[in-house]
Image 1: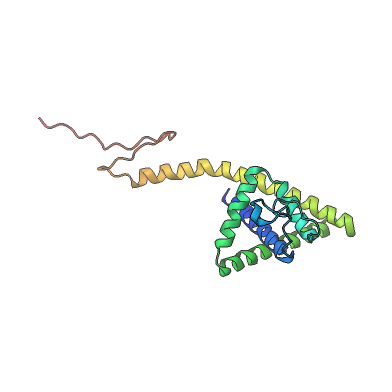
Image 2: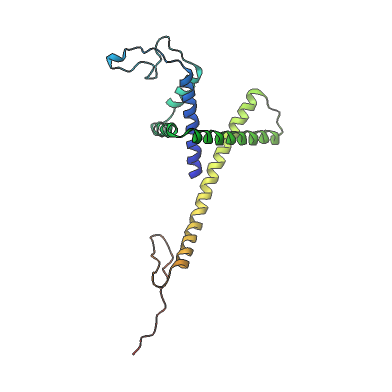
Amino acid sequence: MAGQMRIGFVATLVLAGTLANALAQIAAPTPAVSPKEGKRPAWFAGRPAEGAPIGPAFDNVRRALEALTPEQRKRFADNLVRWANLSPEEKKALRDKEEVRKKLVEQETDAAIQESGLQLEGDRREQFIKRYGEGRRLIEEQLRKEMGEKRKPLVRELVNRLRTEFATEGTPAVSSPGNDVVAPVAPATPAKN
């Protein structure tokens, strides 16, 4: 789960970086409405003003943002703020980490193509790479779920074992809901007459 969130965060940061680069490459268009009238210019609302320079990078980013669900847009906005607040060193570290991840994915994809024995070029190669990536994501997600399910009882067992190990006679372990282990009880001593 944490790994999945980390990947989502890095992907969002990469998208945010792409958005920032696309917006930086586009010259600031002339507002369609004067700011004195109190209305947002057309380009700000996602509709380009007449004569405003629009590049393919801007269109791709706009389409990607429009395709997000409201929850994803909120998460994107939150991550964009987080990205803006990162120091240059932290941004560089995240970019470097993402670059290493991309190279690893590329190596694994090339190995899969080689292992398949297929000689793919152009569009067919791109289709294979896309399908392989989608399949790998599904496999990784399934493995994360399975590992989480296997981890739960093992962690519960570990906690119960540690509870009995660290419980002392003076301070009995407190049983929490859902646990089958009963706190150890001090042996009974015979009553003196």
